[in-house]
Image (cartoon, rainbow, N blue to C red):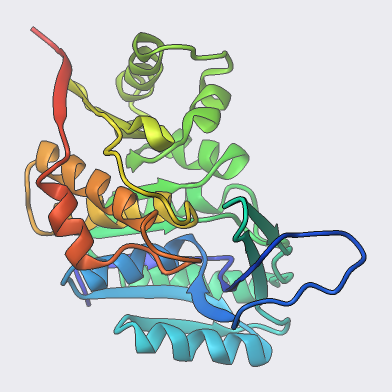
Length: 314
């Protein structure tokens, strides 16, 4: 059993390419297609492994796309617990315009999972629970909305720290049980707060409310090029965005979470873990397509990340 286990219920093959310009009707001559293993939990596992920790990813696969996914995950050095489903694993497609830098992201629906199939994944989580369990990504059709809530309950009983990166009903179900950390973006935090959040004070207050209600011990709010926020029961930290020449924003959130999880697994303090997450998220935008962050970029940017304490309980 590894210290870090990730759960990805809706994995994918992430396809990416570039064209001069996206235009209707005409044939578009693309650059060579790049294939990467994808889905939130798998991306987090890829980053954790690149940064030096052992990690196990649990996910369903189906068809020839699923076979390719398993091979690509293995090439990343990530241990797999993959379960065969009856339907084909999905693919996502990203096209970048060379002239403008704009990206067009096409996300296909996931395969339908039967009750037997999603229960296989749930049972694997129970039997391979590590000290840190990360569930990241959407739930495919057929999986109940309270699935992450069930996982949260099992993690609590096992004494594991459960980290969730999801949205809407699946995230709400996990929060009902209580988790260790969530990583919303601003839109997702506003959905949880059921109100617009227009400044730093509002972000901190909404995050503190989740912590004080016992729904999550930590809230890591990602803000794109504005940086990120980390809130605990006693403190809040803000990291400003680190200026870089961005190539692709795809996978920045997963890289942020992967860096944070790796640092927590390495038993670093919260502030350092937050700094490492920011470095990994920033490093991801330097890579093309769905490549995620590179270790050498993370280590270089880590020294440049500025974190300041913006609230402390007295």
